[in-house]
Length: 82
Image (cartoon, rainbow, N blue to C red; front, side):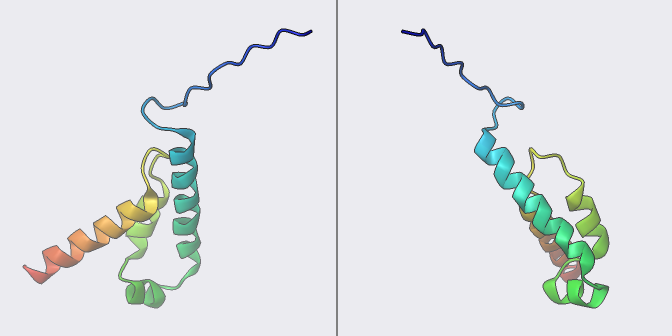
């Protein structure tokens, strides 16, 4: 009979599970797909190209799609009350 040991896999980033990092990686891929859209389409969505570029370079510890949505919301809110 063989003796097997199982090692616990620890996340590369403390406090983040592998599933969280994978979800954030997928979100970043979707944000990077927005690079293909022209500026008019991005405006229809409610984001600007500089916000898309910024979000696509966030670390995997951040969900790029949620951060992009939040940045666009804050910009629109600031412009509305200015």
